[in-house]
Image (tube, rainbow, N blue to C red; front, side, top):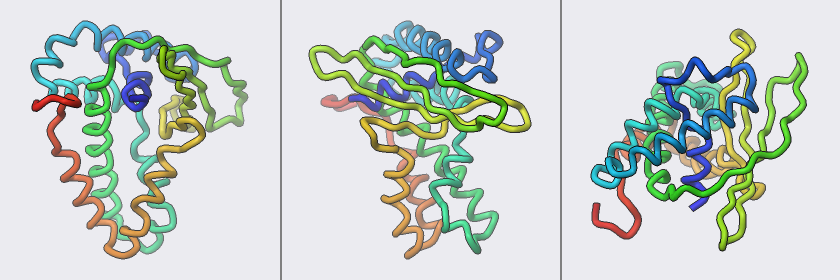
Length: 210
């Protein structure tokens, strides 16, 4: 359940991109969240009729704010040593497609829960990675405590999300543990092929035949 809400926090509306200053990560997360929930609420009828529309929403709104390349390289970690550049690029592209489909799937669970943000993190000229804490108010169930990890691009000064920590568990680290053994045994391209297949999975609402 929490994954849907996690993803929704990171969404934004490209049509209103000029109102979002990516050099101010805390303000960016808040504005992105507000705009995302507005679009998801407005398009619920379309989404219910065609769950695949969530892939469109994710591509247009979420992926521009996710540093999937950095995340993919961190996930590969020591497996980068000696790897062919073209294999690494194929993995990055497959990982991006996998993320987009995964985010679209979990967004089927969005039901308009309230989101509260923690205090703004302190940032100075040397800061390159920060965490923004978020609490999902999911009453009557327990609240969900999250932290989004964002990284600053040294050239542009803009921030993008690359990881999420839910109740102390890093999404990136958990996926790294899940795939590292297979990468070592079967190679980067084998996992890239698997990710591409997962990315093609249709979007379905839980408990429905769609």
